[in-house]
Amino acid sequence: MAMEALAGDGYAYGYRKLTHDLRQEHGLVINEKKMYRLCKELDVLRPQRQRRTKHPRKLAENRIVTQPNQVWEVDLK
Image (cartoon, rainbow, N blue to C red; front, side):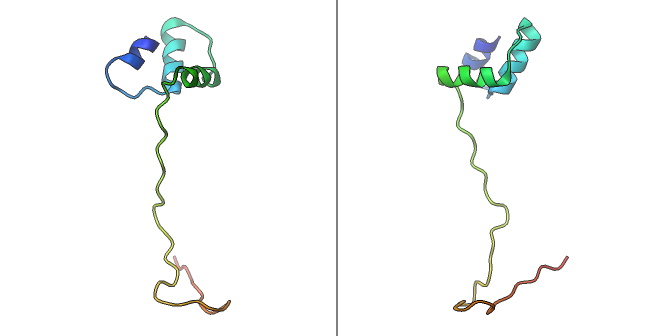
């Protein structure tokens, strides 16, 4: 199942899902770290996604800050 999952239907199977499949369907005792190393050796790991910042900081966009304590910002909730 593990190699068919990698070669087959186009779904993204990561090392955690492969570890789970090997444990459940084949009864193997295998650690996730070992599965990660094996996937890395076989070059089947997918690139990790890049996280985006959800709220970029916009501190004093319309000001030119030249000295300390020139602009203060307050966050009220």
